[in-house]
Amino acid sequence: MPPDLRVLGLGHCLPPQIVSNEELAAALGEPAADIAARTGIAERHRAADGEGPSDLALRAARDALAAARTTVDELGLIVFATATPDVTFPGAACYLQEKLGAPTVGALDVRAQTAGFLCALDLASSFAAVPAPRGGRDARYARMLIAAGEVHAGGLDATPRGRDMTPRFGDGAAAAVVGQADSGPRLVAVRWTTEGELADRFWCEYPASYQTPVRITAADIAAGKHFPRGDLAALAPIARDRLGAAAREVLDAAGWRPSDVDLLVIDYVDPAVAGDAGEALGVARERTVVPTREFGHVMAGGIAIALARRLVALHAGARALLVAAGPGFTYGAAALEA
Image 1 (cartoon, rainbow, N blue to C red):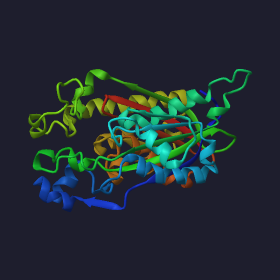
Image 2 (image 1 turned 90 degrees about the vertical axis):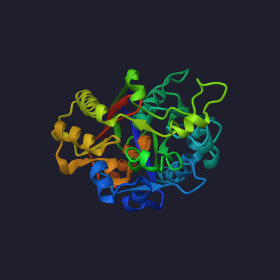
Image 3 (image 1 turned 60 degrees about the vertical axis):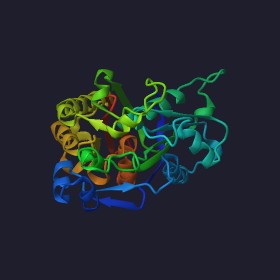
Image 4 (image 1 turned 60 degrees about the horizontal axis):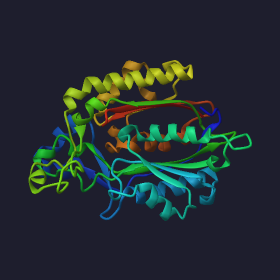
């Protein structure tokens, strides 16, 4: 990994509309107090009608560019981590590129769900290491933009059938300008992986291209197959184990101990599972942040939003550990040193 790949600027966007448990209670047929007790979530943000993840990421990207003192014309690559793109194709990165007025550079989506920001960091680190024909590194990748975000609004089951999954999800986005520089949080290590045999334990199946002649039928809609579904009880011990394993692997790669971590951001759709994994890791509770607990599960955007909200509080030399797991079943971690 390039030793000088750094986060030069971060921004985030949580839509102003907040949905409380009280607002969900009537539709889901469950008291607000029970929703809070079962999910560990008090509120989540919702995008406005007509907004896609590229709209939320646009606001975050502008803040990230300003913080990085980087102009749009300096970007050599845009990577967008999302499981809920604006349209089926092309990717959300294409829309973000156009809305930013970015130059004609590569713009691609990555689909690693809750671990999407980690995947995007890993890709950016690889691009930053691309050699130039005459030595050194390819100047095209001196500045790159990573976006991560979701708009789950409109894709959730607002009936009692959806009470397990629907209150867990929120909308939001974050963006980071990364590149080669002498200052800014340095990417020390990143790892992520997928266990595809668990893919259908937590998924949104329809519309499905494997189904013909149409990708979704009236029967599929009636059965709610176009909404997120998951066997969260069965996945809980798996998620807890994988979050811990990913964290320990990156700690070893970075040469850190849990006591060295100044900020642990650990994310999963069930914040209790994420919290348990963080506690088992041995990082002090007051240094641990569980994004889903704060603003709902934003999948790819969760750890990036939480990091952006706390970056200014990190002192020079502070060490941040980002850990995430989600559908795929994909999980990983990254270590950043301020």
